[in-house]
Length: 506
Length: 116
Image 1 (tube, rainbow over the protein chains, first blue to last red):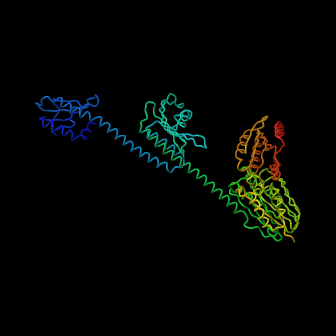
Image 2 (cartoon, helix red, strand yellow):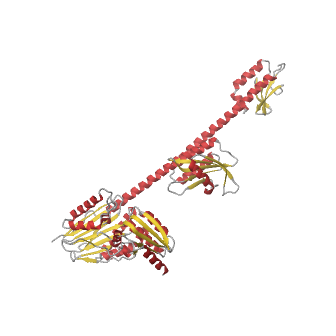
């Protein structure tokens, strides 16, 4: 340190030296550790100098100020004053030194913090980011360990430790409660571990605020005999603040991702559903057909299909998968495909056979996904009398004979996917010219108004009866209009599908 | 939708109140999952205060019933009001579930089932 003073205060020491040389001294210098640290003139010798005064650091003599020469008179007091002056420079130098060290440390810490942000900025994994931050916090604060404790609003709290959990959650719990309430830094001595018997630490706990809520905590552990210095506390605070910003970004990113994923899934489901619906109903001599579906914002599982066997029967299918979103859309496409395959497999297959085989094929998938599907299927063959149909739990199916009363045709079997065997049987309906079939889905009957009332079956049946003499397209238009009017602008909660088949009057 | 649960003679009873649909089914599904976790799972769902059910509600009950049966138990229903009963009739789920007028009848029946 004396070296530094000699370098630093060279001009002042020069002035002192020249004053001594001018007053007749042969040589003047500082002597330490058995040799001259510095001497004036350059070839001067102070080894045997008679006049000496101690340079002290505190009470310890670390060097001597020496003057060589003869007949210098009574100058001890003067020399001691000079030595005192140099001694007084020592604490200043020490302070300067420590400031410089601190500056270097701070610079190192800033570099480390920068590296930290670089290392974690691209990581989307909270666990890994926090492991890295805990390691850096422990290293930078020269601590024995560090940990993060997270308490997300919608999850169980969890902790990330570095190096290994010296303290269990039970050890930390009492301190956490205090900190979460006070929201202030907390310093505790004598924190003991249930993991390492006989071991105690000093613990610094800092809250990490995310939008005003203590969402996480950072803790740093020192040996029990080592105090936390102010720069260390500031550093841990900086890491905590950075971790808070990082956690907030990750949470925001995650919730955005989740939202995007859901929206994408919904959009995909909707496309699957819409792409599978026939673009237009088939043109069959003697029949007036209208089919359409108004999908709800949250995609439901309604579907309808027309399956023609060349020169043979045409089948009408309407179904509703319970459940929403992508699983419903996928099951719907599977159900629809299977019904098509089974219908075309045999020229003699009837609705009952198709539903039975479809159920047998899909029972496990439906059970796995906790869903089921109602299906109504009817077969019309111009060369045969009547209409053959089977109904697996589907409603509403309304039959209205020409100039007669409309009635609800109840299913005789449960929906597909509920029982290993179906109970739906073939039924034959005497279908005369002018008779009308309206097959809807529960999105129509369950449409609600602001008083929480449903549109209901009775309203739909009466409406169909009233409109039965109209063309299929007009019936559809009026039904949708009436349901919309009933809901009075309330958002549509489920798909609303209508298939209307009218046997044209001769 | 309100859920009231109680237990009588080893039978877990869930009494529901309000509309049971896509938007309210989740807590009921969780309750049924929990109730059918261990064997024998005997559950009665009281629907006497339910004024509306949709297809999600139906599939929630079907799932509960399948799980109860897997655990050697049963899920019985009771107290269906007419709009709700109609949905069971139209989907023919009245053939799948044992449906009772009163909770007492359902509990007695399920206990009888248990001793067989």
